[in-house]
Length: 321
Length: 307
Image (cartoon, rainbow over all chains, first blue to last red; front, top):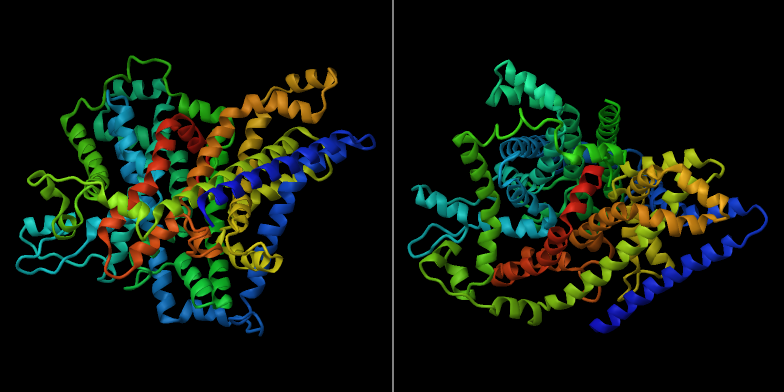
């Protein structure tokens, strides 16, 4: 299929969609009997239909399949869950996921917060923020390639130069270069660095806005009391933006639970770096074990729920503060 | 996506609005310290160097970049566009995947945003049975990680024949579905902010819902729609999971990200292709981001962050 054909297909799809929506609106707009009801239906039905068929039904189906074997033919009870929580490789997966979800939000939020405070109201604020923020626009695949190049290892031999920056720094410092992506469990940490690099911008943006919203009389009063620098940060800034901090932490945690691109691009899940969302992909779409994949998806869902609930409740609090 | 939403637009305005009531006490209190400036500078440099290194590398000749680090460029400057030429039009044919990404992304933004606008308007301004229950249900769907829907969804596409060679429909429909809960919820909040008097005045004049929606609502919430559209655009453009699960790596429909991930995973990494390829994929989102940064930040503060 050549490129023009594809672009044509795209335009056709959009035209079809617009025409369909137009007809729906036009027809229901002319309804005489119970006009209000028909119109509401026309507005809501497309969305609800898609959500029910494409999200609610598949989610229930996945839950159901998690009690069946790899081809969804034989009922196996809780065997899949038993495998997920006892198999040695799976325990590594769960351990890695725990490390990711714990470290990524903490590190990103900390760096984002410190940076937000440092550049707040400085002359170069906009540019300084853009620098940290830009990784947010890049795909995780792109970010991984950028970092793959930082971590790249060349054997430590005569006449061979390092091409990865981090190893070159080690060499400059007189140390041996090392294979950052291979040694367990440290390799997971080096993958987490990538996610932190991406997410710090998000944390910084939201927190910078929260810092600007601290009422001036509070900071003025604190200054009159002689608070400055680190103590100002500790006793005034952080408590004042507490709700925003929680929202940022939980949001990054949710995003981290579902991260899959980095592991796939950097290591392909080898060397003990796999996480739940990546294992879901290999089980479901590589080894074609629908049962295990479904149970992993359910585990992911169960892990996300409490964080989201907490996140939403904190947001409500922030709203009615 | 699930997650962060700072609900009402009023709150965001307050958050983003920025200027404190009195400037006197707060002005110029930071970055006065030299250490603070130094710390900020270090973070900024650390954040920039990896990207800069790759950018520079992508312009170096294949032989040099495979044997020496990018920092040697400063003593031995040589630049070439050969990597870009090869990656776009050579065996990797990234230009084809670039077109695929565009073909995937545009409908995957237009369709969900349109459907979500209609639904959001209905939830905000129309009266129908079970309205509030349904709205809460849609809101709750935000917590569903998309992984949980992928396998049965793929089955549905296969069974209905949508999953054919060269068909973009699985991607368009999937991205639409996964965008809807957040989009409806977010846009609903903005539609709700429109003063009721405006709507009532229009109704008195005999305007129906379709007219009110098109003539009054859409112009007023355009900034919110723009903010969400940018997010959806970036999300779809940068997506890897939906792409590899729904269409795999086939050249006919796979996006840039899928091809790049494949390149990065292959044995004997072709660095010169990878570096140039990464920047081909980065260019569009960065342009979108830089030119529409204002909306982007607003959307971020409103909570459009996908997981």
